[in-house]
Length: 320
Image (cartoon, rainbow, N blue to C red; front, side, top):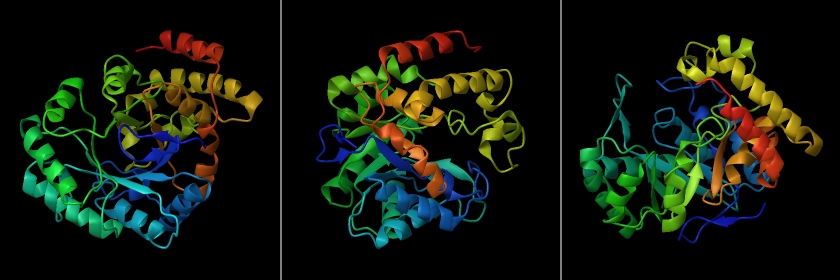
């Protein structure tokens, strides 16, 4: 896979990165249901074997469990991938309730805890997960810049920021990257965010390019209706009518586009995000090795102008 420089950093990333939200497990408020730790580690190992050179995680995924699994998986690797993680979402160890903090002392504690769970001396990219509360944005970003100066993190980035919030922190310290949601069903970033990042040479790693599994080609109406009680997607409108039926029709179109090339609907959906020149790479989750193998082709697949237009026409006529 051809690599692309992340903003102004010294890191050159494969078009696809391994996303480790789902492998965090079910025991927290944004879980994907029960996961198998052995399968999760095998998925990470397979991703690296296939050439993926970066992993994106967060302290809050599984309340630390995802980071622990990433640490175990890469610990024995001779050629280690870049490891990206996030701060600002914190939890109570007793109630397991998740909250937000951008206070300097909180961010430092989070960083130190992530380093231990990941079993690394420095985090390659440390990201502010959410700009919440906005009033503490400057304090939090200043502390992240300090962590970078001290060598605990190599680069610092943000996630879920607006252009105005990017401007605010840019006045304090450079932003290596932005991580926004971006997919056929969530194209809003195209309006202001992606052009701004391209202009400012800020790297962009998009999340949910297949919208949390909806566009993989494996989603069915029956599966969506029968999500486990601890799967957060039960509350997502994209998995409920009338959006569900329209989304499944879109998936059929993606299958038709991918079929002549031997590509899955999910690979077409990922390639659609990678077509944008502002996008450095796409974060793609995998809960087992087979899921990773099913999306790896997106890294080298390119959509034609006609295929992009066909997707655009379909989306324009979908229900809101």
